[in-house]
Amino acid sequence: MIRRFRALPLRSRLALLTACAVAVAVAVAAGACWLVTKQQLSDQRDSTLSSQRVDEKSTRTLLDLCGTGAPVPQTAYPNLYTIQVVTAEGVVCTAPGKSPVAADSVDLAVARGGLDQTVLHNARAKDGTEMRVATSPSRDQGIAVSIAQPVSSVDKPLRALALMLVFTAGVGVLGAAAAGLWVARAGLRPVDRLTGAVEHIARTEDLAVRIPVEGKDEIARLSASFNSMTAALASSRDRQQQLIADAGHELRTPLTSLRTNIDLLVRSEETGRAIPPEDRRELLASVKAQMTELAGLIGDLQELSRPDSAPGSGPVQVIGLHEAVERALERARLRASGLTITADLEKWYVRAEPAALERALVNLLDNAVKFSPPGGAVEVRLAGGELTVRDHGPGIAADELPHVFDRFWRSPSARSLPGSGLGLSIVARTVHRAGGEVALRPAEGGGTVASVRLPGAATEPPTL
Image 1 (cartoon, one colour):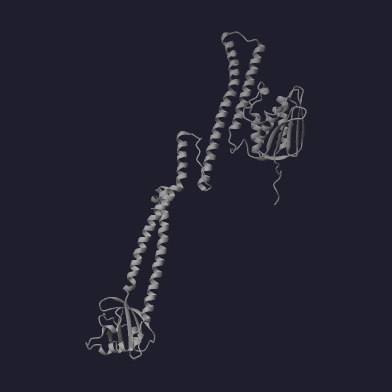
Image 2: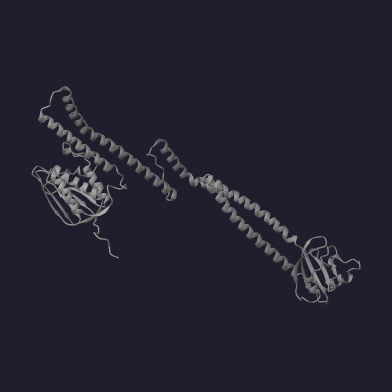
């Protein structure tokens, strides 16, 4: 049963649940109404029976003529009720035109004086009619007067009321089911649009689909979230396509140069025409440089291809930023021939991936070394959690500063220099992942200042 219910469409389930809820509510209300009405009618009948009185003259007349066969005036007794006299010996004298009701032990107790109050009970008449009997003591000793009324006087209106309640409940349940189905269709219409959009995207891969957001309810929030998700997916796909296109463009130049140099070497071997030793050394050096550039470019692409939420090259640890800067300085000095690199480093501990952070610092220092003039100086300072790297190169134009951290972006003055335009992108990515900030700004007197600020971390676990 549950499986069949779950197999139904959502709108059918909502309509069915609405109908069931209304049916239960109507059934409870109808049952309570019927019970209250029954109790009130029964109480009213009993009260009416108990309040009825037969005068002593009529009682004596009925008793005197009981069993004689003489006619009893019909007008002496109300036609609505069955009137009878019960003697202490158990003799029952019934008013004419009515079926006698057998005397109960309670009736005899009242006639014999054992009970001095009106008693109510059910009894069956001689013709089989169920009666409600009110027996009261008479002024004459040894007799009691019973006034009876058919139970059907209450049962008939109760049956009519029950039929009316059942009919009304049925109409209400059907109306509730219809209303529930209509409400479900109206309420689920945004979900239908969302389903259609999802199916359209799955079929066409068109991430430009947007769902209109109406109101501020849960459906509107779901639609807004879906729009945000598709926008993020579209942006991610665009970035991926742009990355592939830029990577293909950047790979074409070193690969073309590498192929040209290798073709020259192969042709020299095939034709037997030796390349002058110095030219051969230059070719081999160029091949080695192109291979190194390709390896660095591939490594940069691998670093940038990882999602921001994916684990990096190592676990996050508490490391000394000053120690990572010192290691990066050692590697940068190997490539900074003719340059002076000075460092003033204070101790500062951060939470980051050691290998990724050191790679970013090397990229930052290499960028300063690359743009420094021959014989120039690079000044590195770490104080108060802020690392600054200042060079004395040509600087960066103000209109180019917003693009320095974009992937594959290179200023016009740097396009003749080696590099892929990914170094600063990796720096920004690593710093942001560690919860820090990075920025470039013009330096006073020329050159550029790169600043990196990372939040500090405790070097020891807190004591409890």
